[in-house]
Image 1: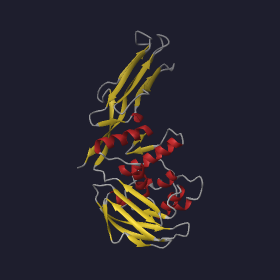
Image 2 (image 1 turned 90 degrees about the vertical axis):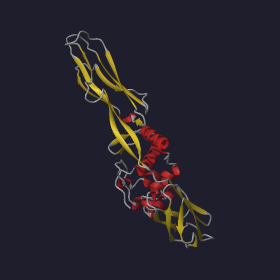
Image 3 (image 1 turned 45 degrees about the horizontal axis):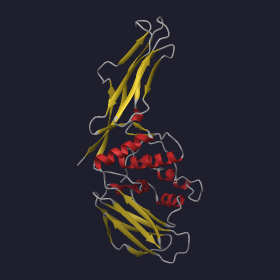
Image 4 (image 1 turned 60 degrees about the vertical axis):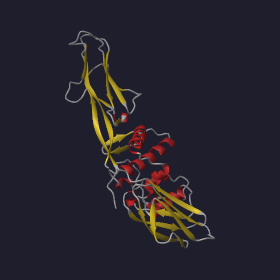
Length: 319
């Protein structure tokens, strides 16, 4: 089952463009090469986002360029949302599960390229379809393409959280693949392990999520009320600096995404004395900003008005 496309900034690769033997191959780019085909599916998005944040941290990059349902995400917002979802819904993606989910979006050639890039398994490769996250029945393929002369060509498939149709210990020759029909319990995590000649490849998938993620913008002052405003110089009685704070607190059961916070302001200022800033110490429970203005002389008018806005996220249970 093909899913719709994530709005993500990602490198576009084809399986023919990946050189698994190259010393500078990037496993994260291989895993994310097809992610644009999975728009709007939170599980695939979170798996991809966690991998991209991990790669950016390793590369000392601060911007991740992620968007989900039109909402931009910073690296810290990805971490906050992941933790919030885990606490509210008991849905957690481990590193292994994130990788396995992204592997389900790849062709067998790209799975092999990924395993070669990380120097794993020496020939055993499990390929699962993207439907494995929410389908009760699907087909898994195990390929055997060793880069040495094996002494044992017996394939053992171990499964937890599902049943397998047919034998799970079969003979397999080099360059061959075997297919297995998997019937999983969607309320339980799924684990698959294929072993041949002492070499193994593992797949771990979480239970199917029973929630949706919804977003809404929050404002201070609230929409429908007058915004904050400061006027100095002409039309006022003073030129002194004035600062007005603006804060939004998370409503019960939701979190805020500080990386989306903005001060929407209108400024009249020829002296660069009117400013709008977002606080640096915001959290997922409280986000603040402020406006300020002063005038260098009574005859010079400086004014600023506006409001704070920030996105809030809600995990809504479907069962």
